[in-house]
Amino acid sequence: NVIPTMGGKVLASLTDGGCQYLIAGARANVGMKAGRYMFETRILEVLPLPDAAGFGRKGAPASKAMMSVGFSTAGSPLVLGDSEEQVFFDTDGSFCVGKTRRPVCRKFFRDQTVGVLLNLDTKSENNNTISLFIDGVRACHPQALPEGLQGKMLFPHLAFRNVKVLTNWGPEPIKALPFKCRMLGTAADADAVKAKAPEGKDGKYEVVLPVGFPDEGTFEWLDSFLEQNPQYVELSDRKIIKWAASSGMFSGKGRGGSIDKPAFNYGMPGMDDNSIRIIIDSVAGLMPRNYVVMEVRQSLCEADRKEILKRFSAPCFKKVAHVVMGEPTADYKKVQHEKILKEKQAKSDAAWRAAKADKKRKKETEKKAKQFLELRKKMEEEKQKKAEEAKKTAEEAAAKKAAEAEKKKAEAEKKTEGEEKKEGEEKKEEEKKDEENKEDEKK
Image 1 (cartoon, one colour):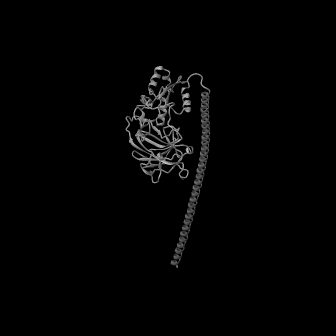
Image 2 (cartoon, one colour; image 1 turned 90 degrees about the vertical axis):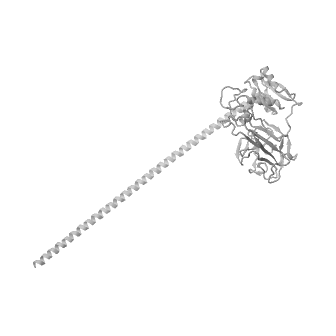
Image 3 (cartoon, helix red, strand yellow; image 1 turned 60 degrees about the vertical axis):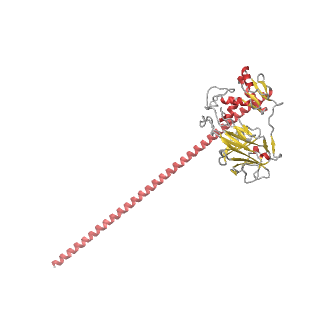
């Protein structure tokens, strides 16, 4: 879904009939294997959506316009993020390796020049790193290439949606960096290799039309065919759904559909009304490629086959019918057996991992339960100990209080006795004085 203009310097994409929801991808034909070089991109225009319905709903693309820029291997998918053999930066400031992403810098927007520098210079301290520059200023520290990409030929790669993108390969940068760095377009022959464009045999491109019964291994045959012949492009509803998933869309639940004709339940105009199929069918016949047109039901009907072949009436196309019926070949059986074994092994491994995780979870649950009981017991013991200490303290305080009260009572009684004794003695003294006074009066 990439339309190059101005000699390939400006890239755009179709933005109608459902194409506005899909990410477009383009990979350069010159790859790096050594040295330190950069290329630049700039979002020239953010295109208004003809129909933005569906954006924001669950399963819809998270953003209306976006761009990702980085490097990938020659055989990786065109939508960035679909393979571990891709490293790139996106407009939200994330550095991504396949589907793994983490924020490393600020966002970049329209009219900002974004430079991507790949350092494969073995003499540099930043060897095997990729860096991002925004308007000539470093936006993040050099990001290390994953080990799986080191030593491989890496090609510049762009992925975008609903924007027009300018690319600059040199000889001079739009925004100079603080240091000298050559543009990829001026790379030395020893550091870069130009990939050969896929060409048709004898100048002809094949349009393969498989003929087979539905649900009788036709798509399994297709997977094997594409694995052995990666130069062919699959045209099918299955491929559209995979493309939509790579673009951040997921079909909702709905009735009907088959492997050949799956149900489109995106809730978006252009996707659910068959417009996306019409657009792709119209464009495919204008672009010389090797195609596999996977329409199982239509391929069985003569009238439908003729309608399909009309789309590829250009002289550069050679139509080939491939009958997928009868006893499968030994190689096909071997591949399918290996695939079945791999699926069984994957299920067995998943079950083993699930059982292991369940066992670990149960063990952790039992451990936590034991720790909880021990903690609860300890808390109860501490509570009981504190209660006993409080009781003892209360009893000691009560005993002390009682002793003090008894002491005060004894002192009060003693004081009372002393006062009574003193009063008695004083009374006796007074009586004695009174008697003495009486005797003196008698005398």
